[in-house]
Length: 186
Image (cartoon, rainbow, N blue to C red; front, top):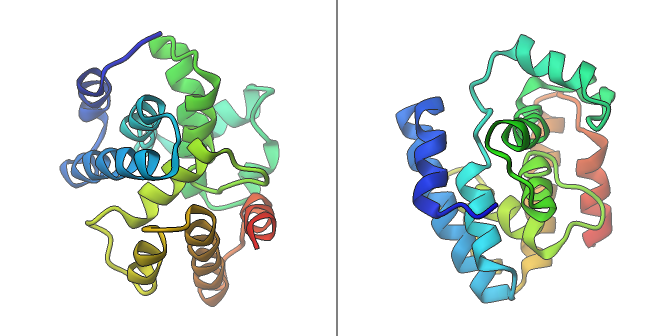
């Protein structure tokens, strides 16, 4: 299934708050730049980035049911913060609702909230674009942006490290795939 940038953005727009939609547009622009810079598939990066937050504001009970009922979703997601759920659940919702059938795009959307061991170049691009898009402003993001000018893996590992440290400082659990992604990149 081919979907244009405009079609993808128009599809997600009604489901996102204005600020989240603007974030999505910036993530899409950033993903294109990163894909061009590091040799990932630009079209797939654009599509995955445009659709990545589709399920961000879906009701928590609805996402919980998807995790409980779809055998492809890891059940241990339910043991971690619900903010993680919209990536993997959203990818499968898009598969069902709009016929998204590109496994690379689905996987990039799915792991953008957690990362995972052995991320593909496309997955790294979407994960990193979500972290460094120009609207983001939190400790460490500027250093990750600088590294992302030249080294995709180092930028992803620092983004993962920053996320892990932040969650630990907040005394929140860290999803194992985030640790696996970090360990895989250092």
